[in-house]
Image 1 (cartoon, rainbow, N blue to C red):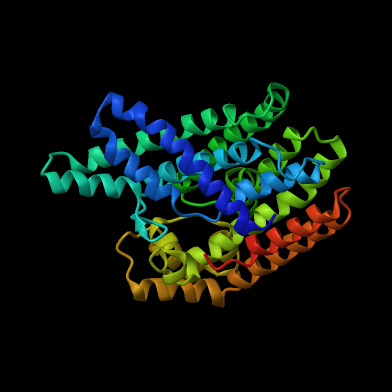
Image 2 (tube, rainbow, N blue to C red; image 1 turned 45 degrees about the vertical axis):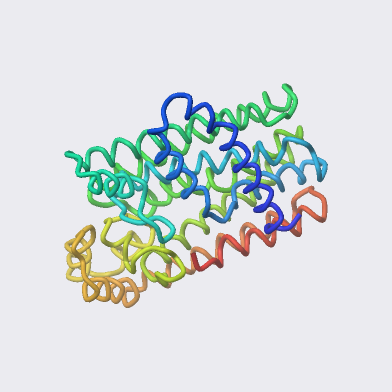
Length: 350
């Protein structure tokens, strides 16, 4: 099944789930309509990589191509991702998401348009509740997917672990920002738990667990999934500094204004020398950073060798994943699909 077909089926499953929830919310109050509109806007974008990896984890473990309920179970990961994105944007004070106002800015603008007091507080509070709602609904969508009780029980263990890991990964990310820095090793630990496991390894494990995978299949999927997941996030770090706003949907250099202590930044600080490192630390996290400041930081990252070192890491993780996949005891169609997904994850421009 191609990524395009999976995306379409996931979109349809999410739309159907939200429609089933709408009468419940309207029975409470029509005032919740803006919350639903914000959710629909958030769910309308995305690459649907997590459901795709879940599907091919299922197929890698011998699951059938058209199992009823599998797409709903996989699509629930998009609600979990929506929760993470809303909360992440609040913590990072991000203004945009996928070219649109982030959820808390959307609600803040709504309050301002109505002339309400404490618009910023309303925006933050409403966004947190939206993220909580998405987290709750992710579990509900998974549990009501229609898969059998035994399969759901196997998958639930992975799902619970995935949610725990991403919360702790997010905390480690906040901790690095509060401390004002992180070593490459510390930044890679954040990447592993906030992104790599959550985006690729655990969705693969979830699909495999639902299909009743043998331990050797799960081990092989880790050997492939973790390095692809790290490379995926390192590519995201590069795009956050050097990406085209027309493609990424975020202003140029937004990660620099938000002060993200990424692996790319840590690699740069290792190589920049005292003067340039001091400049990077001074400008990083300045919300008023202008185009000239972004250009200066990009120059430091490039000239120090930080960008080249990050690209070399990406290439290394990609090679590691390819070797693990080539040795994996999985069907040929799953091997081919996972190879294509790795390319899509690592070479993307947005």
